[in-house]
Image (cartoon, rainbow, N blue to C red; front, side, top):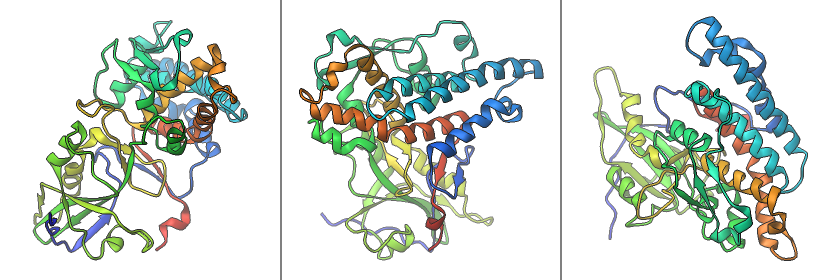
Length: 375
């Protein structure tokens, strides 16, 4: 079937998709643990930085900031320690770092829950019954994980919900090769390029990616409700600031458009055309793309699961095995599995820090090397 022609446009801007009321933080340098940890320490040690996120009187702000900064100090200590561990054993320290970062993030949204004393992880797993990664699952409980999930996605996770580990692993883009080697399926996160474009009379958004969501899935239904595939425009590499080495990508345009007024194009309203599919969009952690398409955890029903939350849940799972069943990582018995979880400890650390600072500040942090900003 011949694809329809794209609407002609005369203006274009390459931009990561973001909510207009949450302007991203753009960095003109590459991310590193040292850079992000230093900026997280600002929240813990500088009152004007850490206190700003809390409502109420100065006394109320100070009370919450005291708790906040100590969650952060604990998290930073654990993360620093994890960076010096070379294999999957680091997941134990990474998980406790992420747990404390999550409590700090939740403190402004659920202070009563976080300050009540004992707070459950929000996930459970029985290592004694663990058999293979492909058959294991986590069970959602009331506690930190579903609270964090709701805060970041706007969706609720019902206690008792099962999260299959194999599916969670396929939602983490950094470990795709290792997931394939462990026979756990094909990675599902797909990076895409994004631009806001306009003709003299209207504006809309366009996407560029390798493949569309699998037909007939919940993800595809949401995507096709808002975007249609079109023939790539002849100058698509210029429009998306792509090298001529890049070939074979597919282009999609938003079904809806925004009229151009006498004041020019409404950039915010145009950006919202892409945000209609925000349930399946995740922030980028690499400058190779503007964002990623993050499919539903299940094909037939929608369950939002961005990589940030998949990393968190898988790190909890790995920490449980490290503590209670380290034989799961025996190199003689399970070499692919051992390499997989070594890669989780190595490859997910930096993205988890980007997830953390973005969550704490309520806006995406987008990193670009300084050289990438020059044509």
